[in-house]
Length: 457
Ligand code: ADE
Image 1 (cartoon, rainbow, N blue to C red):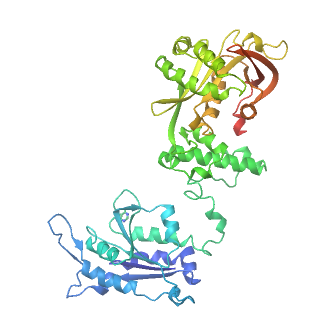
Image 2 (image 1 turned 90 degrees about the vertical axis):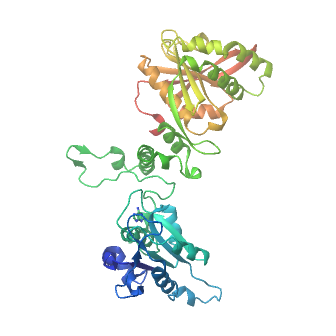
Image 3 (image 1 turned 180 degrees about the vertical axis):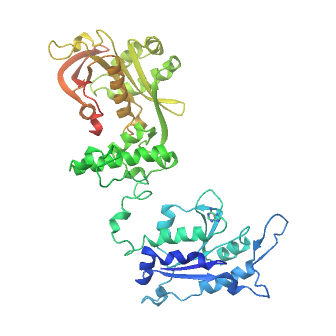
């Protein structure tokens, strides 16, 4: 790949002859040509700038001088033109650094790495006459006006070096170890990189995490991925909302949701908050319960029975009463924008477990009871249910319970697998009445005295 860097200060580019970049040039992988714009200036003073039309501060770089330089650069013969196929053509990009350009991101850089020649036109002063970009675009040249960040530099040279290094290091053969490119920030899913550590194992009282020396590669990979997600959500919430959804697995989504970012089955990610239910939530909770409860019922349950249960147990008045009594009923909600998209209801305190669940000697009579955990259909698989269950378990433990019990339909294997991932173990069965029809559940219990999130263990 050939880089033509044009500036009134070509010496700026000397550092590009050092390190890996210098080696790549020696190896013939890249050609770096720095040019002094004044070569193309005319007149006694070889002036490259003039006052702006319309007035204002500073000077503007002249289009005619730049055009002579760029015509020459664009006419440079390239190796790709000698390719065997008669139709082979070279991709030449005219890159113009400017704080008003499009952000130079990794995807942009990855695309530029497929070019044959990049000509960087480095402006100084107030910039280059706007007709330069206009003219070359109209002439069919690929023009990229780019910015390396929301701040203003004295000129485009530093930005040109940033682009050159970011592009060149992606070329085949540039990196000693191409694996280094795989997991770095902004690559792959679009996550920032996880923290890295080397010897000594202890440094000024800071010891590296045990998982990194345990030899369990799957656990190390999971740990790194979780930290990358947490870092991205904390430092760059904008990036956390723009990840490549197809690259996110179930555990990634759960970690993201725990960081307040929910990826739906379809559509864009949204910030999600998990909080305690408030009196004003009753109407929305009732509607959410009425939407989600039927989906959790076994197919043999008649609609009339389901409706009767909803009317008797899930009306706004029922939720109002429960929300008013937080010593007994603990409601946690997941909110996206102004909408409640999930909730858990846990009964705490003495005698929380419904009698049909208490199976002497098998289910702890002083357990808390996770009565409901529902998430709206579009948000299933987003990790919201994982966060809700973990929050409910923490809440029950804070209320002095040593275990959490639930019943879930025996045919619903997905729900059972979900609760198993969250540390629940099957203990017994129960039958209970939904609108006059008997329903068969498995009863699962989670020990709350063991700390940590079982999903991440
Ligand atoms: N020239 C001056 N500031 C710049 C920036 N932030 N990015 C690219 N070119 C520039």
